[in-house]
Amino acid sequence: MTDKFVEFKEADEPLPEHQHLWRLYGAGIENLGDDGGPGDALVPSYGPDELLVRHDATGLCFSDIKIISLGEEHPRIYRKMAEDPVILGHEIAMTVVGVGDNLKKQYHVGDRFTIQADINVGGVGYAYGYEIQGGLSQYNVIDQRILNGDDGNYLIPVQPTTGYAESALTEPWACVTAAYELTYRTQIRPGGVCWIIGTQADPNREYTLSAGFEPASHPARLLLTDVPDYLTDSLRARAADMGVEVVDINDPALIAAGSVDDIILLGADKALIETVSPAMAHFGIVALVMTEPLAEPVNVDIGRVHYNRWVYVGSTSPEVLDAYTDTPVRSSLKPGGRAWFVGAGGAMGRMHVQRAIQKADGPSVILCTDVSDLRLNDVEISFGAEAREKGIEFICLNPMNKEAYAAGMAPLRAEGFDDIIVLAPIPPVIADAVKWLAPEGVMNIFAGVARGVTAPIALSDTYLRDTRVIGHSASTIDDLRLMLHQAESGELSPNRSVAALGSLSAAKDGLVAVRDQVYPGKVVIYPQIKDFPLTAVPDLKDVLPSVYALLKDGREWTNEAEAEFLRLMLP
Image 1 (tube, rainbow, N blue to C red):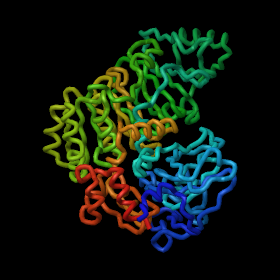
Image 2 (image 1 turned 90 degrees about the vertical axis):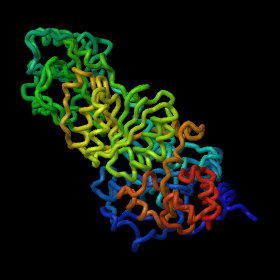
Image 3 (image 1 turned 180 degrees about the vertical axis):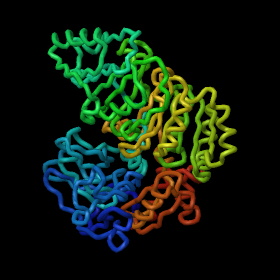
Image 4 (image 1 turned 120 degrees about the vertical axis):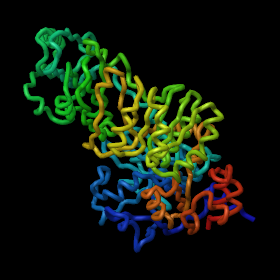
């Protein structure tokens, strides 16, 4: 008797002429599919410099929901979707089933890959599951945009023993691990645009700029607004020697948005900070050089903190460089610290919590909050005992249960949190949570809100308590390679994130479930299997008992369970 799973892995069976896929024709879930289901298409032909791949497993992501919600308004969609629909799916495990003549020395049928979906060619984005057909299809062509893009080859090889869901979910996991590897400048950007504003400078202080403005390292352009004469004279003299352009700016409102790399404020109030902040470029820094607390919180564009990597730093020292170097921006969790995961019950939140527990130098206290008792209870069941066995104080609280939440948070207020990871893109939640940062604490806004969305932040804390607010959630090829290595070495297990699964026909139900946060974890679609409805992993007990028997603790997906599932469900 043949083993369907073994044959599937070998991938040398005759290819079908047709495939099924989900087409998205515009904004709205009603525009997903053909007559409410997956449509039919030819299995594509491939050229001498291309590969044909089979999609084996596809994770569904909230980013897919953003495309469904926005349609052609999504910044990564550049076409008329009614005429050229989008095929979603960027968290993918794939197998090569066809090799172009010019690639036969490099690739073979049966080779397995995952993909770094954020593909760029000539500076233009062609993300997989956005501009390039994604994983909610059975087959696709891998062309030179993917094999030879701006960052090289976007395919990441996968070992034969790695699970399909396991490799597909390394993409969202890479975003999680990358969030703790963010780096920020500790000096004025060399060759950039620096703007120094002294409108509210303290006349009793003597400001200095000892580094970052010398022949070895200096901006290309210096903008000055009301800077004290002694500092202006010094900077102009040094600029003349280095050929740096110096421009006097009389009206800060005239500076173009996104045009300045460093904004240095020698004293400021709320209005001034809010006026000049939009001038920050990608990776821009505002350095607050001041001693007195601000009278009120500043409305910070948290969307651009997340997407444009803006950051506010500060120091009470009159030396400008100290704002950059006294407390460099930290993105890794503080070893032995106190970490709070806001929105911990969602799929990405669970990954953050799991990583924090499994890290060798992780926090000593982990607080998980979520507005769903169902999801929060599952976090406790999944991770509570494991955390406590490692000596971690593990706390789960629902802010909707006001009395219990207040009682649980009260003993935590005095020390505050070294790390606050925000997984709920809700400005009032962010504004409240940031108040709990301990000295030198870091808030990482992982869940992105739209650019232009603000939250009131006490920026005085950046120079009086050395706190930082950072954010990002994308990953690079290197991040994905690292995460795949961690998965294949057993350091981290993406399988623990699998909450529900189904066939390609169940993808629409899966996307609705992601939108409505039905499951405490990830939904995985297997495009090659027979019709199988969306099913929670624990519910396999009644549906496929032989698969259920191979789960870990009756709830966690395993490679062994997946192999049995495919043996039963492959056509």
